[in-house]
Length: 315
Picture 1 (cartoon, helix red, strand yellow):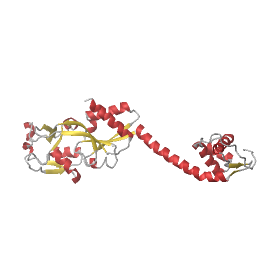
Picture 2 (spheres, one colour):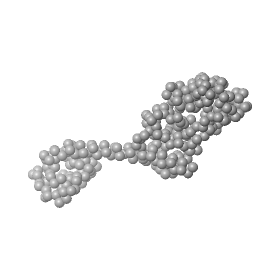
Picture 3 (cartoon, rainbow, N blue to C red):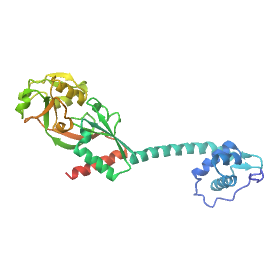
Picture 4 (cartoon, helix red, strand yellow):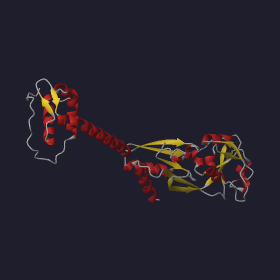
């Protein structure tokens, strides 16, 4: 135990008035203020008593004021020590909050990126190339791919359930995007449809076929594009069974209930019994995009976009 007498000792003027107390010393002081006993405080802090006493004396020298009265039995706070306690607690709480915020951003830049992918977008060459480039540039960033269905694309980015998403435009409103690719669209028909043998087809030849529909009004503009509604001659598309994902859509087609138009890559990604893919000569192409929410501050998203720009610049 420190055996200096109870009388307060005046420290000489601080020779380093610009030196501020360390956060470590303030934390030690707060524990001592709670315990009012060097032995118990040192035990809590996993320090020896002399080491703790030395740190408290160093803090007093930095502040140029006595904080505790020491005796062989107990420790008492001086008036200055009592005044320092709430201020030190407030400062420590602020530092804890600062470190917590910094830790979140450090984890984001080092660790995790959530990416949505509609349909077969996770397996497209541009997606694989971008994620490979990201991994090469930032091996510390891990990537979680989340498959998303037709309905989820409306809200998944806006609700920050993913940081970005590989989607097929038209995109939900309010998103920023990077164009990745353009490719033809094909018709997906029941395998036994007589038109399969007449390929390639025109939109006019498909005018009497019922199209698969989508389940919510928010998808109307997106699905009108994909079904080419209205058709070039102004006629409206007839809709039939509803599907919210690719498996449901393909099942309806295989059972002869309807047809759909899909990206040409679907003939490789979605080979299914009972369906056939047919070229359509006068159908506008489709595009692919990487989409994200403006103002999103995840540093890992910035790294993803940089990787995407690098891949696109290579052609």
